[in-house]
Length: 247
Image (cartoon, rainbow, N blue to C red; front, side, top):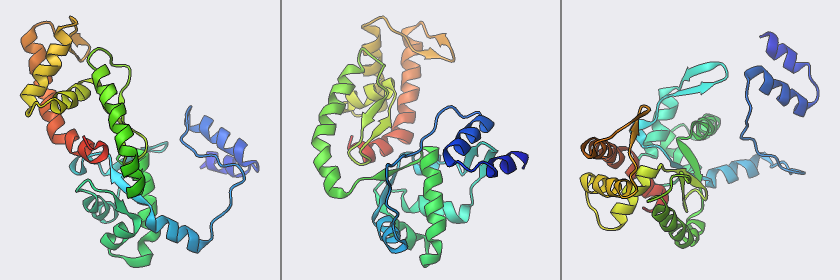
């Protein structure tokens, strides 16, 4: 309370935000800065928001109804978040207008949905989605880039993202998951086959899997761990990557 009071007495908005960062020990921010912004009217803002699309970047049943902030972890209201998440559960982008309709509260739910979407984006469970035409135009080039990155993952783990034509940005995908995708693109059908492919890539370079800081030595242990990860990948991650990458 004392800190909030102190912040409210600082007239300069930029300095106030800097002091706020110091108070909460925050080194990095995800703000957008716009030079000479033109404020939208209420009608323009409403119409623009209604057309904006969103897509889940976390599988629906893996989205935790909690959010961590500077004041600690907070539970999210099920009556607000569950209808939104259920409407997005099929992995397809939905417009704000569609979510408002699914929410079932008419114009009165606008502010609640807007705030909920901002929270889900901040948590990394949701991302803005590009218009359909933009997405289709971006897909050929993003596919070529992703093919090159997947091939690179055979010997390198420095790039942990793939390009999404849906969001217009990067989707976090670890090296082993990239190898599973590469195996799948080459015709491997099941998690055991994906794991065997990933292990062969590692074994050819005398590399090993590390689990909880411990290097797995035997081929059997490495393959077992990769198989475990491949099974989880198929269940938890592949549906999201299929929707956001067209994988």
